[in-house]
Image (cartoon, rainbow, N blue to C red; front, side, top):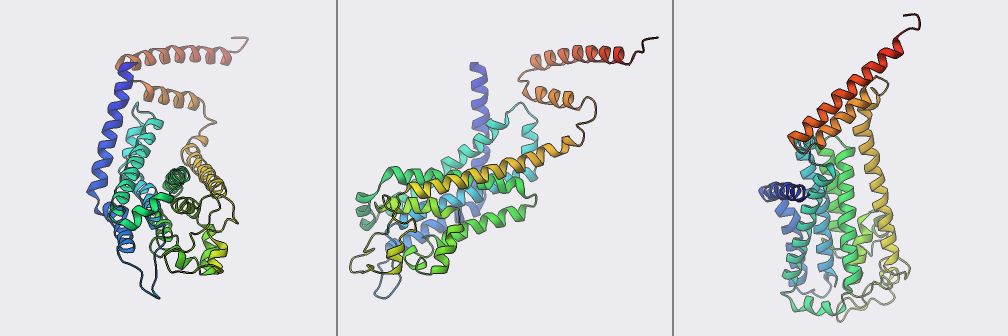
Length: 343
């Protein structure tokens, strides 16, 4: 048991090392996964709003953390999966005794670590400004962290579904990019929600974006309004928003608390999980169904699985010995069935 645990730990460490090298060897991961969000956030928090100009949201840091999470948990995860699929790395790994669950868990574990590290870096950068440190007094950490993890899970599930549902690399990465850039510019970072949310068409269309709900939880919790999902009024000293259309709509949940966007987020997670499972079943089961009527297919598939699960040479030899005995017995039974009564 101890040897098995240490063996799994070595596998996990090696896979984490491979992913770390892949992540830092691609400049796009660094630029879009971290630098773009951090520079945009710093621009909003560093420069004071001018009279008549666009002012940032009080929850800009929450938006930056949430949107960088979408980039890393969806697009970057897809990059890894697509690259490993094209190089047949996944196929080769799955022919070894390494379990599928351990393999995919390690991929997700690395992704979670990256998201946590980048969130902490963004937080540290924002804390250099006194205006951001003051806001910490209002942060509701429980709903914020719940929204953060719902965001990661949703983005991961969407990435897994895209990587399986579409064979062509370009389609997967384009759809992942669209998901990221919609969130970037329409859900609270590239353009403040207090500005873009005033356009009714964008406001209502944004209900179709799965990431809107997790981001809204994080944003409202950051300014202490997750109880009724309202915007902080005024957003900045000297501003008057009372009576405006956006002030009446707020984040759009009718004075319901953060439980409502959480429930909708869970629905999207279940929905994309079902799509992922259907796509997996279609991709990996269809090829064997056409041969299911042929004799011995089920036995051979079972033997392949047993070979993959063998963790030592002795186990493999024992399995071969048992398989040979079973084959002899099955052949004997088949001959008896074929033998005629008069023979």
